Image (cartoon, rainbow, N blue to C red; front, side, top):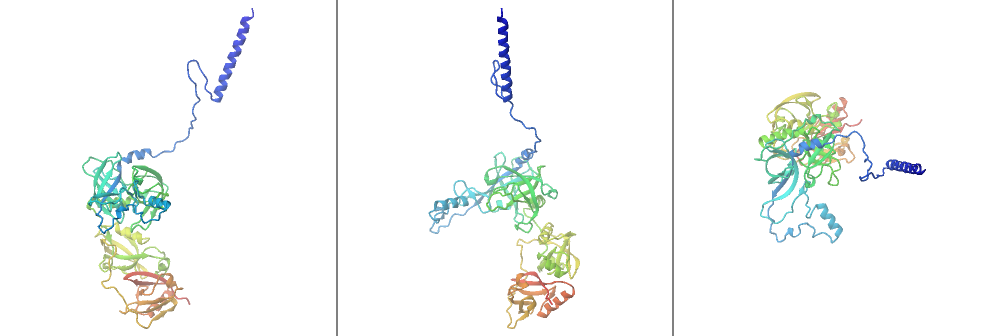
Length: 519
């Protein structure tokens, strides 16, 4: 019988077809049924590539040391003047009846239940309203612990209007803090939390080793959101943004926003390289340009605040100005480095040591002085009473004087004369035609009063104005136009292209370099 062979052939053909189907299904990634199981899917795509190291390990270790700083201030009750400004808490009653304008004003000023931004860039938690003088929430910033017994650092501008302070820990716990001290000149402040055990804290780094391009991580409380981490690199060093006499900021591109003020910026070792203090932003938000107080500055200031609640800085007692190329040429200096003394205060240690107007300070204890800012930082780093060697350029040569530094007064500027000079111009003026000036002798016979300035002259370009008093030329007292002419002649003989005039205006001194007469 032929039944068995035919059945075998049919069965074999069916088995081969099934195998082929499985092969095709596997090739195109379609699941197939197997006895007693569900569909079998192909593996998901995986890429084996080198993994870039992240910041999670650093953040995990340092985050417990970073806090939010809530600030409250006592607000006096509103005066009863017959009108209630708080009937219009948003200040919108005087706006035109334009919905788009009103919406813009509301969003820009930050009014409404969401809270807003006050002038120093910190989140405003409440609106001013009728109260009995009790503390009201006004701002929030960031800070970080620097010791296990509760000392923490933030910005002065975060706490300067506060009367009560609360720190919010990484786990949400709120603790009261007291203000230990502030230093407005560097925008630093120290708070203290007491009686709750030991705190996780962080150390300051040696920022002299920080290089442009190094990775950094900023941790803080932007917009009052709570602990937030951003990362970037060091963009620049030694930035001067005009914030104060000791500007020497690190610039970073990590995202820093309102509320980050006072928060730390870490290196990858978890050390603080800087403290967030300012941003450059046309919009109010981060554009990748933020400025940090360097760790070296912060460390010294913080130590002083913890010790005595204030910072005592050395004081030289001189007013200074930059050395321009023209001024350097007029004095025979090889470069425009240093700080030109425009006046030495009568009660200052500098004048007692022999420093006088017209001197250019080039070194302090052997350290080069590149600019007035550099001099301020060098002197401010010394303690009052410290004896330092100050090198000055005077009469065409370097001299060194020893100065016992005083204590920087509360006011950065002290009057150098008891009686302001208000000389009346005599009737007969003289001219310094080559300089574009018309002058007359001062009432007390010392110096020449400028009565007119040629608008097309070098003198006008350099800011000399009628009423200015020319007191010296190249460190020689001026009592008449002949003194100016003599100084210009001597400058030409010495091969110099300019003379240095000391100008007094409103009891303030400055120096101006003017080109010598041509021909």
